[in-house]
Length: 137
Image 1 (tube, one colour):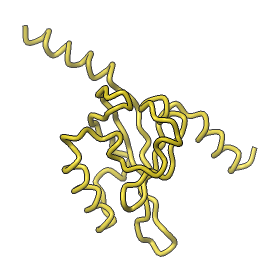
Image 2 (image 1 turned 60 degrees about the vertical axis):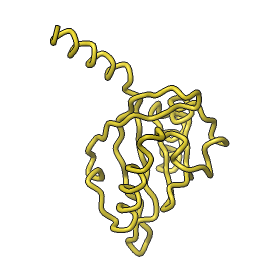
Image 3 (image 1 turned 120 degrees about the vertical axis):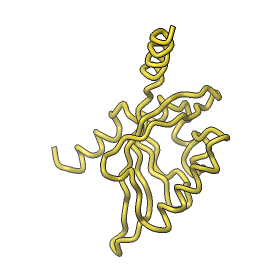
């Protein structure tokens, strides 16, 4: 297999969500893992804002950070750090996700888009909450 075949198979088969959003936060890439986790088919997500997976109460904070990252080209989450946040599914259910990002720069070095690799950690998050409550009792 050559590099392109490996990349295609990885993109198609990875269980984690791979979502790429452009400078304006419009979804340009949405893989099968994103479909499985968030419930939106690729055609329902492509061309739409990241608002479709961002809880309404967190959107203002999300966009302030996103716009600052795009404007400055700097992010504190670009070195493989995991970010844990709530997200929403198509059916309105709130889930917990962890993700890391990969800044995507053009040939001129300017930040053009952000790729996020996301995993649903709702079950683990809920278990930790139950354990903390049990320890406090």
